[in-house]
Amino acid sequence: MTHFTKDYRETIQNRMKDDPNFTQHLLDEAISLILNDEPETARLVLRDLVNATIGFEELSQQTQKNSKSLHRMLSVNGNPSMNNLTQIINSLRESLNVDYDIHAIPA
Image (cartoon, rainbow, N blue to C red; front, side, top):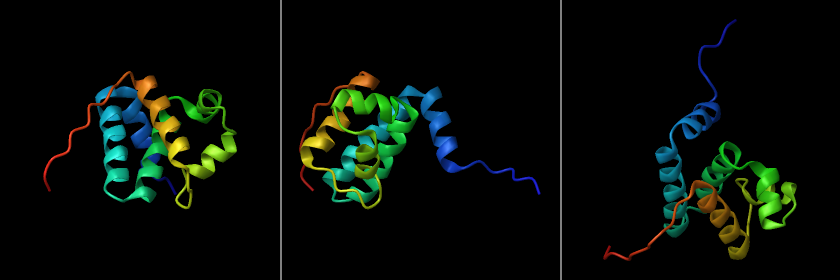
């Protein structure tokens, strides 16, 4: 039997490789998810971003953290410290060549 549907991760990764703007928006979304108390989803988005951009081996070198530990941190049940999460986001931000200027707005 032939399957005509692609794995969604493959589709997302291909889109990230082809569309830097999409990739930047995913990083924005991950940060918004963290700030809006949705850490599980944020970790999975960050994992997909790492896989499609710098990869876990490069992230390991940049953060000086074990690659397997980084995989665990960015899993559904991961629990990265704020320092580790900041390092991961900053590595992605630098790789994507983006900067952030955060502003609070009334809810």
